[in-house]
Image 1 (cartoon, protein in one colour):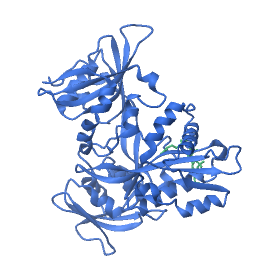
Image 2: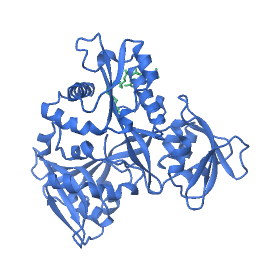
Image 3: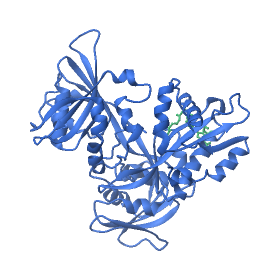
Image 4: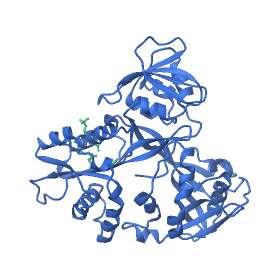
Length: 441
Ligand SMILES: CC(=O)SCCNC(=O)CCNC(=O)[C@H](O)C(C)(C)COP(=O)(O)OP(=O)(O)OC[C@H]1O[C@@H](n2cnc3c(N)ncnc32)[C@H](O)[C@@H]1OP(=O)(O)O
């Protein structure tokens, strides 16, 4: 059974634009295994990944049953049934400030074959995705990106950042709280079957987290696709509270140091904790492993609390900090009204959008309970309102509450239409919880 978003016809403007180049933009029927196999092979090639095995193709076929999958075909190619470009998308709940969520159009698997690059194929596919989401009434689009140079031109901006941490465990003595629960080993299969409810339980706590399951979930444990060899090295632990209720888990890999058997590296692949106790218990366990001298943890929050739970601040270093989740507002009113705001106030936002979706002027009016209305507004700026002009990119960067309006103003990305409005916008938009997304999609 396919859903409406999968059945919605392919965008006619992009289809016609590519047809004029002799190319066919089309949907892949999720039940058509042969076509999806060719699509998956093209996608793997597009990301310079190895050719997928038959087993992996079979597993991915199941995983794509709940996605909208599109491709571009060139009838003049040597193998005309193989797509020369791929993209897939689906609606997913994205957490926004105030422990709420908004439906967002997740876009993934954007590839164009090297033989067909820079002909405007990606632009046609991306614009088609945005128009399709808009037509379906989805107010925000989102993606995680291979390169930070591609998606700004389509109105996207980074809204949640991430940090890769590197910890010298010989210096990082535990000074955090004692916990009352216990950590125990579980199998990867156990986590696959039992772990997702814990992830779901905490999803609304952090802006930027998204609803996920299926392939994106099992992929974390290397239990699908051609990563099964690598999964042999993974270990999983679960934290149970004093009452025996599972409250978190971690998946990690230890790599032996060839030079020194007491200097292994522990790499944290995924860690989720529903309570502070679980967080402390899992981190302490990971930091106190014998024969390990270094811990690495990638795709973690920029404000990782473990920094404050060890004896030596400088034992914890940032290996890398970068953009991670990019968002793109399509419907300003619906997007802004979906989240909550930390304090009441009024703001006039003049939003520009070269692609048209979000070009508007609204009055954002935040009530004392943090809820807001964002009505189209063409009057004079009210005396008590802040007012700024900004692109849809800048508004999308602000959306999850992790990017500073003051910084964007200093950078020339926001124009104050009334003095000191940047500070006021910051007070309105900033989230007390730093946005973070814990997966790639
Ligand atoms: C959400 C995700 O899936 S992220 C993954 C993105 N995919 C990859 O990184 C896989 C490898 N790369 C590719 O497959 C392709 O090079 C793509 C998809 C990035 C671009 O496809 P193309 O069809 O060549 O892009 P297209 O010709 O439509 O270009 C669109 C615009 O983006 C620009 N652009 C395209 N690729 C890049 C790039 N890698 N870096 C910067 N700009 C780029 C073009 O200059 C063009 O700009 P303009 O329209 O403003 O003049």
